[in-house]
Length: 208
Image (cartoon, rainbow, N blue to C red; front, side, top):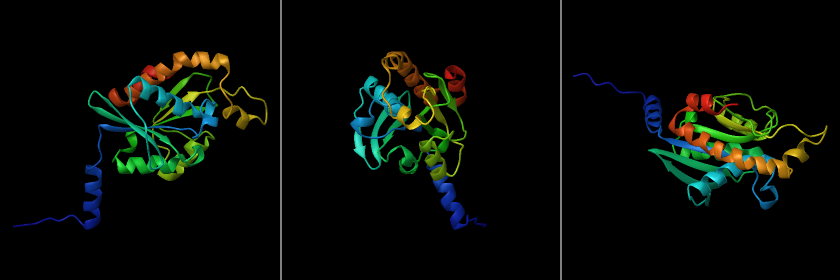
């Protein structure tokens, strides 16, 4: 009788791959913690996830490296994460919760602001550069890849030279705040579509 054994290293890899939960998703909304940042442009990731949690009647729990809540939708589990590491160190929280929950990288969706898109434009992609965004830059470094899905919400570049930091950390104008009322529900639909309909269908339906 012939017995075949995987080398120990291969056994570990096979076990780890088999443990990934393809029906579980990590939705990481980027932002900075604290009331001073709550309504700033840079915190649109937090704002969208807060709106989703409110719509689904979910409660946030403060845990290691962030606030977490779980959204169950048609057989899918969406773990919503608001990192508490500050924007520029977002990768540590994302990696920790991916590993803890056995979530494959293709089931990660990072929600963030983008200066390179007109205000209110939604852009979902499977991969891409960090575009100068420090939160995405840190995630790219920690995950050692640019191949992870991201959902960028356009905040425009309507600032004068040398005022970028003031702009992204500034409050929404009354006009922007009013227009957000229509954009936030669409953003929630896009996040749920990512888990239910897949990345390609979501990009076709919501990119614009």
